[in-house]
Length: 306
Picture 1 (tube, rainbow, N blue to C red):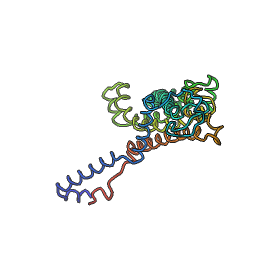
Picture 2: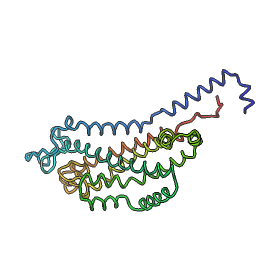
Picture 3: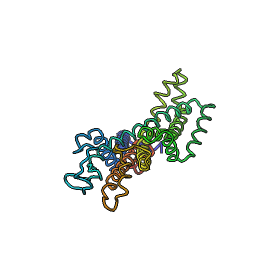
Picture 4: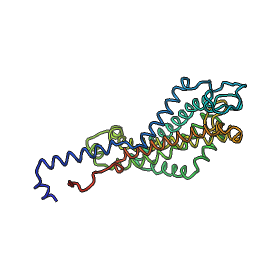
């Protein structure tokens, strides 16, 4: 093969090399329809959470006794509840609650899990052994049950729910960051940096962190969807945001008893949760395809195929 390659014209080799680079670059930056759809859904939810005052026709707690349990119409696109409050406005303001809950809880999980996983994976020793065993015990417990116990002990509120969801997700990010740090720790360029006298902080920042970033972004995106589902479920049970906060899970719980007479009270909050979680899952899967080198497309045929 080497002899055949040597006999090939230099112009042919350069042309084929350029074609392979263009093909690899195109595959790397190719965006799947799922990633586009997921990014669009997530962007819409974020924009709704930022500008609810401009999108909602009514205040979320505005009571209109003459408009109780109205079906969806032009005046009330999602209908009204038993107090005459506009359901569309409450769902729009509920997007802000959902985004806050997801970002704060996942941010707490990422911060604690990444710091602990990075330090134990880099230094190892008895600290790595102890913390890893504690995380394994923590992972053996049902996550939703742990969150229920924490919220029940601290009290039912949105802040306590965020804390419980954040604590519940720490082991997931700990194991991911620790495994990635262990792999990067044994790389030749890290050993070369140590030989040249680079400090541990510089090695972690310049050589280990870039290897952690891609899987961490993907896991964070997927974790946001899990948090929304779990948080909505706990609010449905009355362990999350308390009235009159328009949280999607709480809205779904308040409408379950009126499914026969006022179906819209449960359907639209459920659709809000479903669409948002679907968008986050599509975004996470698309980012994994783009950021994971093993998922990128490769040129077909042989390396030197025409």
